[in-house]
Amino acid sequence: MTDTPLLEWRDNLPPDDDPKSIRWEECKRDQPQFLVTCYQLCLRAKRKGFERWSADAMFHVLRWETSMSTNDSEFKIDNNHSSYASRDLMKQYPDLKGFFETRKQKPKRKDLLPANNGIQ
Image (cartoon, rainbow, N blue to C red; front, top):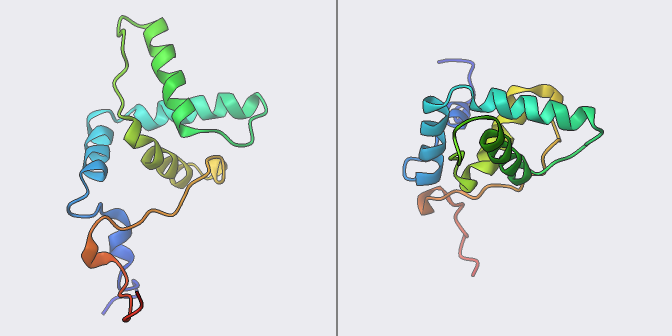
């Protein structure tokens, strides 16, 4: 038996049938510099006095700056990834803790939902 809490290992795994989460993991794998670039943009915002920011706004700024500074006319990132990006950034970079507002994510699979114990 290990000292690891029973369900702790699940924190790092996307739900089996959550296509958005799976696509986010693929995005990070295919673009390993993406979160670093996001972090650098967040640091610029913090230096300008931002205490909180929107991950959606961050994505729009990244698209704009990419189109202005490269031949890539349209930076491709799925808007559905913004909630995943904000959580990963705050987890990976402690100085961003609380920089993004997040909402509790609900399980996508019905078998992961708590039983209602007969309450309707």
